[in-house]
Length: 274
Image (cartoon, rainbow, N blue to C red):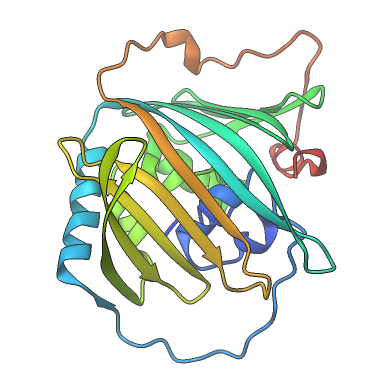
């Protein structure tokens, strides 16, 4: 399963049920949670048809990021919230990620619908919503991949853009791709980036990958096909750093005095941040 579909889909409760990991990744935190999926009759899924060049570049990007011992990046995010009338309302957010293998992750999200922080320190995962006086925490496996799997499969929470945090991003992203092809080069934030487009059952998505020397994502766009309004999520990446100076304290939860621990699921599903 591609966690940007299970992962990208996570910003939205609707998308949490999507097969594609790219979809869950982003919509789990800031939600298009009230987007109503349109039921569709099951259909046979054809054999994947992915262009060799597109598959090779996606795999190279995954290997480049997955082999890094540590990195930081930022992402400027926009996403649609669909009203019961079908009207799409667009919101924005900014995400900062700090990762240090094998067992440290920090994610900070600030946006129109609220702010959140997430910590993983090798023993526990913690999430804090600054709009409340509560935080959620739970034990976690002693490595990033296992901790992310527990978050998604047991705690029902997917940090946005989580697919890029795994040791094998290609495996997460490739997921349930049905078709894929190259779309040509584009200039994004002054960088030449190679475009790829993919089709899955519940989402279509595009990714642009830096032409080099760092094979990192420049931009991601996801279109959710399980809603007739076709809401989108997009992220423009910047400030990739593979030799950052990371203070160990950044992975320790920094919680205001008076905050109280509650169920992890209750914090991650706080409707104020949706």
